[in-house]
Image 1: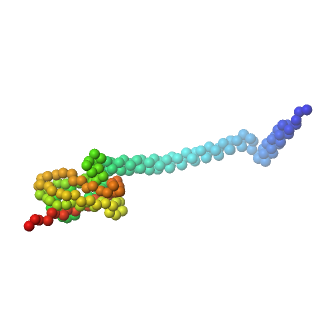
Image 2: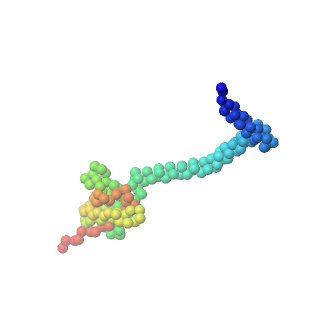
Image 3: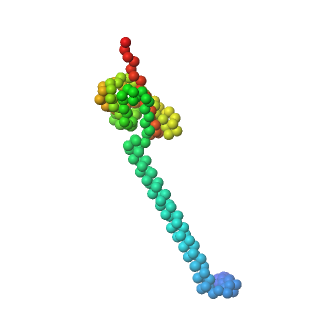
Length: 182
């Protein structure tokens, strides 16, 4: 004997559809068109927001990429460090045009190097003070200096291994002349 369960399910589903269509004066086609119209309006609204906000997101992304490129350039050139010279440096006839990280193959690889130009003969010590972005001192070093007038060279300043060279944002250099021998 066949079960009448599937027939009962079919009959129940048909009854529900008839009841739903009886509640509304619209035909199934009209109800379907209305539902599809709502879905299309939702999709159109999403598209409008993507157009409006997408332009802003694209501009933000482009600006961010531009900042990354500028940061890479500063990192490569090491020109982002602010260089301050005490008055004694200029009075001694010394110029310091740049301070950069020492090369890995240098005698003191964990160091900064200052390019020093001597307009006068100078003998004494150069003192380097390194500061982070919050202007806190994070390292210091001293290097002996003996240069003839017209000479220029890189002077290394070995720093403690704990000093992160990448976090140095400002460098201050001071000069102490060698006391005169009497």
